[in-house]
Image (cartoon, rainbow, N blue to C red; front, side):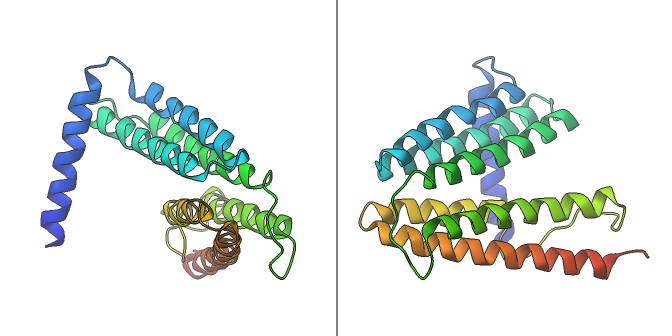
Length: 199
């Protein structure tokens, strides 16, 4: 069952790669292009056009799929491409979270700025804990795991932005949820790094 799904996804990825490789845009250029829909999404978040913001978040995600698909189909998978992809992923996430700071959100236990700050801190630490463990040679392989990876964070924030169309308070609940779970994830990764440490 899982194998069949994986095979379908792989075929879909190949079709995307073949189709978009004909445009003559390099994989790295596709990667950089993810910033365009992300910035448009930022604009719509600030203006509280939440469904349009969500639509352009989907566009950014789709372009993120395109770059890898084009790279694989054209045989242009490189370390630089993987590096740029990782960096752009963080920029897209940061741009979307930045937009939340412009909103007038209701207070839920604490001001929304606190929860957004905690979310920023958690997303940064989850990524940094992984990078630091590898840089300091505590682990041989890149740390993975924890409650929320970047993809899960963005998916939940996307859901929150859609729900904000109906009631902006739902978005605050989602921010609180992701803020707490992100910081738990960073603590989990610290634990994994210590557990796997060679020293």
